[in-house]
Amino acid sequence: MRRRSIVVKIDVDKYLCKGCYICVDKCPTKVFEVSSVIGDYGIFLPEARHVDRCVDCGICELYCPDYAITIIRSGGNEA
Amino acid sequence: MNPLIQNYLRSEYAQGKRRTIFCPGCGNGIILGYFVRAIDELKREDGFDDSKLYIVTGIGCSGNIPVPLKYNIIRALHGRALSVATGVKLVRPDSEVVVFAGDGDLLSIGGNHLIHTIRRNVGIKVILVNNMLYGMTGGQVAPTTPMEAITHTTPYGNPEPPLDACKLAVSLGATYVARWVVPLAKQCIQSIKELLLHRGFGLLECLSQCPVYQGRYVIGIDRPSKIMDYYLKITVVSDKPSYGDKITIGKFVDYERPTYEEIMWSIVNKAREGGNYEA
Ligand SMILES: Cc1ncc(C[n+]2csc(CCOP(=O)(O)OP(=O)(O)O)c2C)c(N)n1
Ligand code: SF4
Ligand code: SF4
Ligand code: SF4
Ligand SMILES: [Mg+2]
Image 1: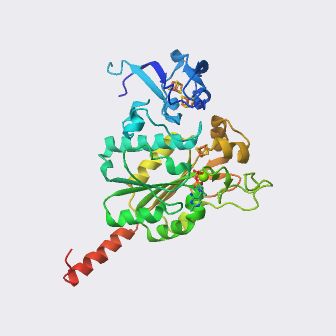
Image 2: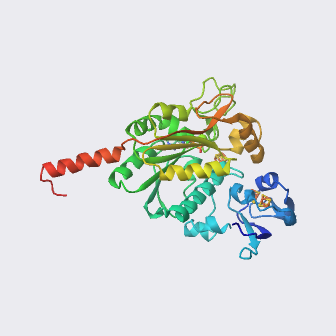
Image 3: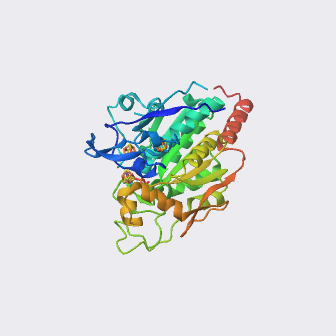
């Protein structure tokens, strides 16, 4: 059986992100928005502003071409 | 940095001192992630031994895909990845040899090697990244560029019909042939796993986006996610390869026949037995 875990945070690495916005466009529940924070490549970083809407599909992590995204979960060990 | 990927990176990359050379939103980075996940899943499910992995690359942006990984990597000459990989496989038949090559590398300058590697059924696994042109050198026409498409070397439209790598491979007797497309993550990862476990020659063609050249010129869309959507529109699942207005994707063949390294080693062993040969 799959244990239920909750996504508490989605981290975007500001050194790795190249600002392609695949995560912004492809998240099925529109968790990401383009922020006004500038990353290392001089792009506006995406920010997971609506983590409460995240359905933990993993698409953002899978599609990010620069392994910049980490989904941080909690409660993974509870039933 | 994503910790799963970080586990598989060479130290400079894992420590964040180096980054991939790809443009923003390039499919090459996504394929790198799929490859790592396929290996990670295989290691957990089947006890896959990645210490036997040798990766040989062609030249081009897609040849750079495995460069950040902490595996044995050989960067061959342009178009010659398969010849180098054949050498590795013959000398170390129990190794797992994977080739990363672009459509230009594998099908134009390296087309000859592709034909004979398939014919011999050398047990190497090829991941062909098809972005429909030469990305690294500035977006020139490739054998995979659709007819009439605009590229830097076909400003009035491509006069040549494209080549279907999968159809070619099937006709030459390749023992595993599949084509998938970058937006289909599950299928791509599953196919890489099948490829790694396959005995004999295997080809996985992965349709991938090059936003800066293919996106802007061939397709006319430069937003990476929109090119991914476009790919889903022009592809259709089938059990037969076809590469026209609609491109078919799916697994086309999967069977076994004696491999080149098995045949070669049986000859070597026979010669040794018969001729009092000392190894
Ligand atoms: C012998 C030789 N000829 C030409 C080149 C120039 N060159 C480098 S990459 C490339 C084409 C790469 O296209 P492809 O294989 O499709 O890879 P992509 O960059 O699109 O991933 C060419 C022609 C070279 N490096 N060596
Ligand atoms: S997909 Fe990755 S590289 Fe692209 S914008 Fe999102 S975090 Fe940045
Ligand atoms: S895991 Fe899925 S739902 Fe959650 S942020 Fe990523 S893409 Fe959106
Ligand atoms: S030129 Fe095209 S294929 Fe090469 S890294 Fe840039 S987007 Fe990717
Ligand atoms: Mg190419």
